[in-house]
Image (cartoon, rainbow, N blue to C red; front, side):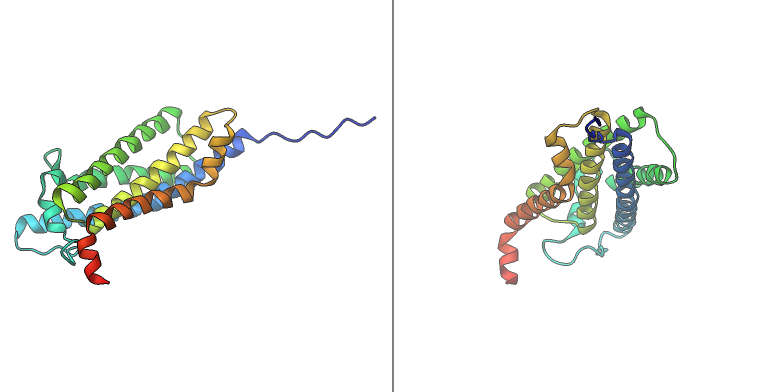
Length: 207
């Protein structure tokens, strides 16, 4: 009598490799985009410091106006322009991502540190979003690019770490992992909705 065929269990190592590489690609692509946006913001800030009358390239209408954002105290929370933090942080993210894709394996504490960094970053970004919408009352396009990249990085890295750290992921966690792109898209839509609501008086004049 033949033994019944057993269904192979999900390979924990395989799942970890998949999500690690997925996170690495997001780190490289998102990191490059974030690094570029942060670099442009830094250059624009230096131009503005040298010439207060300078009009940044991201100032295109009464709402998308970067000068008030760049000149606000929120834009230099720690005594220097926030984009400098972005340049350093995104450079590290890109370096780690390239290392992973090149075959490097990082220890657990590096992933824990990266997880802590993305959590702090996403909280900081949402404080900046609130400040832009309800305190400053203006938007900065390059800042919004950094917001989007930070959110995507936070979601993908968090899901990767949860899946790898959990020996037997629950059905809920597995489902969340499957819908990561939708989760990010919904997150973006919520922010877009807040922007639409906050500046509706202006947007309605464009219709």
